[in-house]
Structures are given as structure tokens and as C-alpha cells.
Length: 65
Image (cartoon, rainbow, N blue to C red; front, side, top):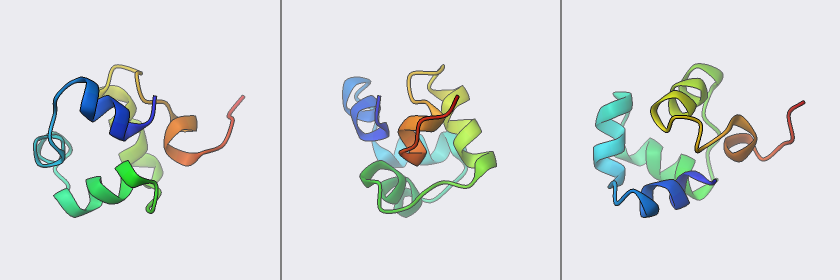
């Protein structure tokens, strides 16, 4: 599931999600739209916070084996 889909389905705002990750809303917006790729540590935190609903493959746009 893409990050923007997760935020929509859980009715979580970008600002709320940003607080959970201790990141700016601007960064979350970029990650959500796909215009920015989160670094490894942030991507792993997103996977953890979303309980695996958003995967590394979803965030980085590549299939990981």
C-alpha cells in the first residue's frame, strides 16, 4: 500500500503522521506523493509505524526480495 493510500484509509493527516515520525509535514508530503524517497532509517520507521501496511517496496518503488 502506498503511503498516501495508508494515510487516506486510516484518516491520518500528514501532520499527524509527521509527529509520529518526528519529521516535517513537508517531508511526509514528499514521501506520500513519491517525489521524495525516504532514507533507510526513515523508511524502516514508516514500515514499523504502519505495522507493515506500507512496505519498503511501496516507499522506494522497487521490488525487494
